[in-house]
Image (cartoon, rainbow, N blue to C red):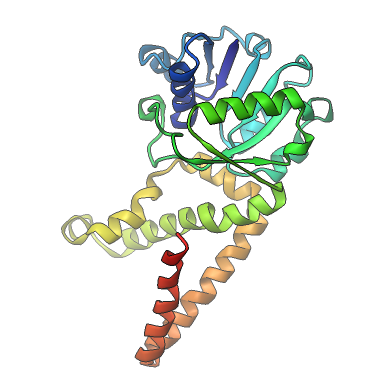
Length: 276
């Protein structure tokens, strides 16, 4: 089996390592527009070889798309002439626009997957073989994927230790806006707010665990996340409005000195931990 990974950063590199670990007999081919990433991926043994050109990738049994979501859509247009037996798995954080942009003749080749895994680090050096282990992967609109592709994708993700759940792509993007995209937006906003008000020395002196935890994901790739925000614009705006409303409620309670009501408001937030 020949598996090609397009995009050799954290997600693609870690996926390649997981495949090498659990499917050692497979040939892993890498492809990335960043030549430095290709060189690092070879040096770090993330892949067995680098594809000489895109046509080589197209003749793989399995193609993994681990690039920014706008890039995924562009690449899918270049895969219109692949074999009916080829399996394409995209790892994008948004799903509805990707699925709707997939050429009809290769829709059955595609398994639209969103692994709920990642770190704030980027590039091939950030990759590690247990990134996906014991995490959830969401399969979206799986009924439109081919039987062979569904079975192969299920085998791969199960073998690398992921738990599969199934979801409609529209519902997925709404849920992802709250659970994943909004926290990143908040982190970026908090980082910029602090940078405008505090000198670096004060930040280093006073920053504790709470601040560091909230700001950690603000180190994530601006290229990747601007693409995600673009594709999920409508849902993200809705979540930001909901979040802004909660901030306004808290602001008014503090402003009016309604401390007992503020405690009740915060106690309600505490109840989220009973679900997690």
